[in-house]
Image (cartoon, one colour):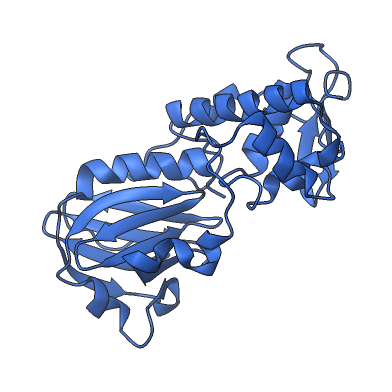
Length: 273
């Protein structure tokens, strides 16, 4: 599932292509991929509107239109938004095609879990999926103390608490494993047990792995591509995620792979406490 670095990469690559363009038409190959607002048909909301800007909130991409609406896109597991400078026959699993004054934007989703919702821009951050989100982990508002307050409210282990989008927004399985490894924290520690020094280390580790992920254009194993269809490169830099059984880069002991919080988790029992 695309996490914060992947969605931010999509936002950046898309913005360079579609900002300022008009949506001249919409074709729905699978209407279930979109959600409209009240009784207005989705194509009627977006047609003949101009794309003003693109934002991100957690794992959600926000495409602001000049008609007072915002498209809220959630990729879920296998969703992709791909820009083509010229018209192209839709590939398999393409569910929505936005025709633009220059090129096309295709929404492709193999598993059919992703959605694009049209929402009045004034209501955008108030819809249920966005209103519950915690602060952005790269923002200054996530101080060690605030991170600690958020974790302390959760009677969960660290892995589960960091996956909870109400604590911080945008973290998923890959970057939680990487942040905990960098911070030297065991994923099964009670979330409320961290010292002030450990919270400072965790906050910095979260920032470091997310910034590194963005710099590498995200992590690609199977489905993720940026808006140009290009792979990310962060999978080449992973130190924990996906490396179960391989030697720890610090101590050489085999990394442990087990289910934590219902998710496959990789960590070092020697280095993470």
